[in-house]
Image (cartoon, rainbow, N blue to C red; front, side):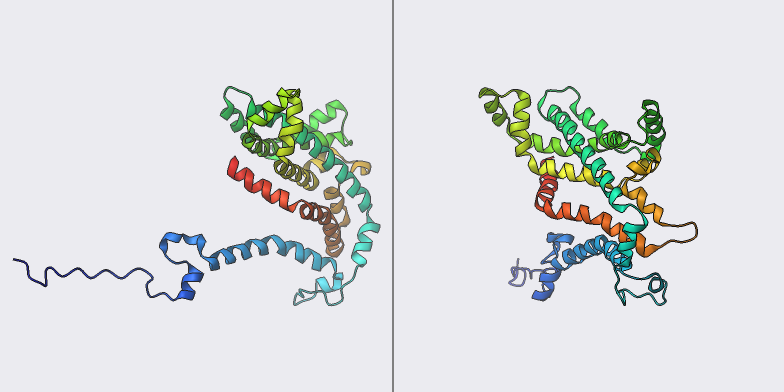
Length: 308
């Protein structure tokens, strides 16, 4: 026989975090179901670490380029230059033909980017639209080909360019850069081409376009964010590359910027302020490029990640 005490409803257990204040809930999350990274405080902390890690080296190089060599070796270290000077930038252009190096890098990077996008567009369209057998195997091979260390490819590339007589020419750098950029450009464009409805291409071909015309007049314009993303990635990779530029081109006439910056150092001296000034000059074109196409690049990376 049950008693009134037995029929009494059980006392509910206290909820986890019930005593947490409203401010703490807003900063650390409302409950365990929200996940670790949904807490605003943790998101801001993670974003701050990423921004600091990305911008601090560039800011430090900028401060170094404004210091004198005496101030640079002064102890304790000074963060902000006591007497900022632009003499290092003047010497960066006078000690070495920096403008010539900039021109060579721009020619090589631009040519490599255009050719990479051209070839990658055809490859990505074939993978995305044609009924290829073993399509996943092809994509796997493309990804695997991008994982080979560049140093393992250096000797075959050098021997090939020497046999063709292309050493100390722009072609010696442009063609290897195209090959190295093709995997990432192709993968980016494949994800975008797959997201474009086939009906748009069919309508264009009904109106008289060939398949090639539909690719360049319909598919590529609609995939503009992906094209910009792949193009900027290819340009930056070609602009920053050092190993091939050092090994394949020893002539000052075709010397690129990364190799030219190494020539500022002497046998027993390292003029870090001048080298830092040259590095800032090398960073500026890339910073301008990213600033101009920031929205398209960010949109391309996010859409490609969602649709790939």
